[in-house]
Length: 408
Image (cartoon, rainbow, N blue to C red; front, side, top):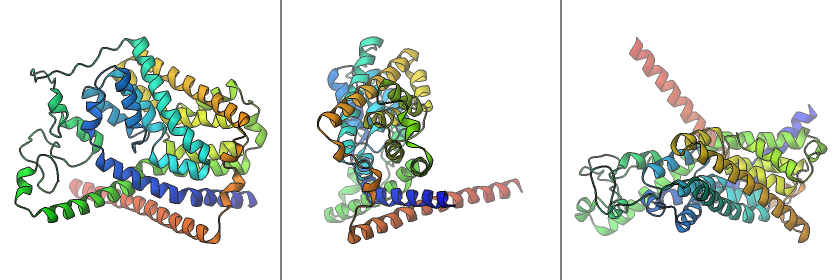
């Protein structure tokens, strides 16, 4: 009974510590989701150049897409003209980090991981893209200057919101826009898009700005507390529970028996590769691994390999880009994560950076006022999660009722 009580206490402590930072990350991610157009991504990833690969990594790093959400996004980019190396670079950097995971990393793991994770994600993504470019000899995706009737779009058509491949953008964003239909002459009149100039001409300017701002704010909150939270909540709760279980029951020497070298890092990579987990949800697990005595570098290997790879992503790469690209992608992710793992272990030892990594005891070092804020944020986050599951249950019951009426 005492073990169960300690398990619950560890879970609550981790939940309290991560709640305010997760809410902040969700809000920032929602804002980015509404302000970063998909056409911007497509326009900068259409060739095999080092610049395009680098842009794909830098653009993908802060985006609010986890290991599940990045699959349709990358697929849409690939089918919209992005090159294979750029797509691989985007696939690595996007799920490995994000604005939400950086804030949660700072809260649970300390400033060292909050700084290292985005840097490692971008560098490893560029490395993976260059490896694919070097060994796969992928053809450069050419951007034609006219529409030849075979789906090749001109550079100007790619830079507008009315792309002819509207169905790809729908898969990636799930947002209402003037491109949600192949019939571009019937845009939604309530959206502030580049295709609704005539509809906006008669409206007062101040009213349009205010209403657009309100609509955008509603979309930010709706996405952050709905779709994005839904994408991460399952594995976030599982990660918190497993982290609490590791801190409660796993003896220190169980994981430390592998040492700090390549064997320990390979074990963490093997654990992380098949997992369907995002960067934010992997963070509580990393807390458990650190508490169990694993080296900071080995934990970083898990934080990099886990979100960047999963069975669905590997299947998509094999189907769309071939087995050779898949092998190169896996080798790049594992080798880059191990290299960064060694680098972190060396830096922690050489520069005495252990104080920049949070330990189990550091989770409770807050004043009374700060604890009240953390508790309030935890209540808000718990309420959003409960609301999300209530909506799911209601929707499921509604479908069952409609099905029974139909069959009756």
